[in-house]
Amino acid sequence: MKAFWYKIINPGTEAHRWDWIDSPAELRLCSIRLSAVPPATATLIRQQCATLGITAGLLKGDCGEAGREILLQGREVSLRELSEMLKRSGEETAAAGRTILGLLRRKRRKGPGVLQLGRHRLPLGERTLIMGILNVTPDSFTDGGRYNSLPAAVERACQMAAEGADIIDIGGESTRPGYRGISATEEIARVMPVIEALKSRTDFSTPLSIDTFKAATARAALEAGVEMVNDIWGLKGDPLLAGVVASFGVPICLMHNRSSTVYRELVPEVILELQESIDLAKAAGISKDKIIIDPGIGFGKDLHQNLAVMQRLGDFRGLGYPLLLGTSRKSMIGKTLDLPPLERLEGTASTVAYGIAAGAEIVRVHDVKEMRRVVQMTDAMVRRTGGGSA
Image (cartoon, rainbow, N blue to C red; front, side, top):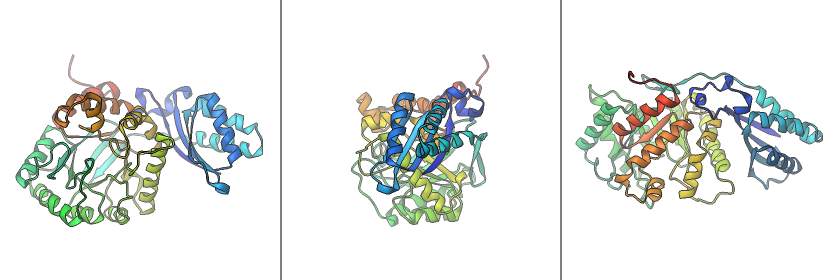
């Protein structure tokens, strides 16, 4: 049996400052993935978890001799109790108990991180970073065609930077429901004039991200000086992208996505599929400090699934990577409030505040000026960043 340690998560506000090591054990939450678990042991683990209030998601249940794969999520004190129960239940289950206990003992203090984007060092965990959305497409779901000309796109990027965006994410292909895919050649033709124009300006220094899953587009953007890649397919859309990102040594955001909304167990499967993307990145040589994850609100999930993922955002912190949240103007908000895209400002603000409280380090938004205020106020409460005078 193999086990993979995620991270201890504190559901209290201190978690968002990475102070989990000093919190009481009964308040700490853990996510542990066990693989190659013998069927009988898997059954016993799930039975015991039910009595202890531990979520035991069966990720792979029909693996024959290879065993089963289980994601355990629960309070540290409950997982310790589970490990002791298993150690008393026979030799095979005792091994599982010892494995869980060993993982719980491997606690390490982790301070606030840094997101290195070219010459820019952005703090992770000290304050929430804002990624401004710039769609240079004719068919985006919310602002299609509005910034489709070079002057309009450059002006909008400069405006978002002035309003407080830490990163500008440039996309040349719409990903709205029912979108028409385009070639890398067409995508490059859309984004490169904007990238080159911004990089040539002496009065613009905000780091840029390229929103693409295509290796050719990413390479062209990175060669022009773009500092980050944002991939909506988590390295599963183009097998060459991971190598390109690794060769340039830039950060990448791995978003969860899939073509089906049918899940056996929603959150455990999303976590597992994100882990698959992380494994692809690491196998290609992308270092751990260059990886960001995104649970993929609005992608491969229906309304109720999106809301369920939001409710359990803290679980994704257990993967051990900075969390980016992209909910801006999305259909989850529109369907809940029965509003069109341009009237979803308040709904977006609610999700941003909730996401920060749940541990998101980066928020991807259209309305930078308004969301910066939401971020600043939420950070003052959650991260204790202070504020103005009384």
